[in-house]
Image (cartoon, rainbow, N blue to C red; front, side):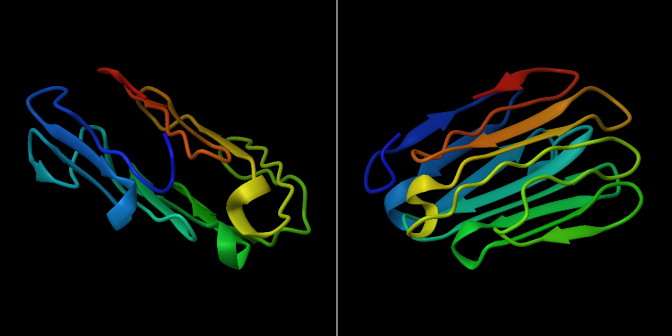
Amino acid sequence: MSPTRGKISMSPICGQISITPTRGQISMSLTHGQNRMSPTRIHISMSSIRIHISMSPIRGQISITPTRGQISMSPTRGQISMSPTRRQISMSPIRKKISMSPIRGMSTIRRQISMSPIRGMSTIRTDQYVTYTWTDQYVTYT
C-alpha cells in the first residue's frame, strides 16, 4: 500500500475496516460498533508523515508514533516506553521485540510487535509501506 494514495475496505465478521492513507485514517467497525472488536478493541490512524497505532488488548494499550520516535506499551500489566535509539524491549506478561532504523522519519522505520493477550494472538508489523496484520481468536486481518 502506498502511503500517498489508495483505499482499502473490508468487512470481516459483520464489521468494516477502511484504510484511506491520503486522509490518514484507518477506522474499524465490527459487530459491536466502531472501534470495538472481540476480544480486543483496535483503533489505527495513519498518514504519510506520521503513524499512530493504538490498540487495547484486554486491558492494555499500544501506541506507536514513528515520526516522534516514541513507543509506549501497557498490556494487562506494566507500561514501557522507548525512543528510536533503543533496539528492543521486553514487557510483562509477554516478551516483545522492536527493531527500528529511524533515518529520515518513517521511510526506514521497521517495527514488529507481537502480542498474545489472554485470548488469541495479535500481531502488528509496520514497514516502509505500512503493513498491518493482526490475528485474534476469530480471524486474521491483513
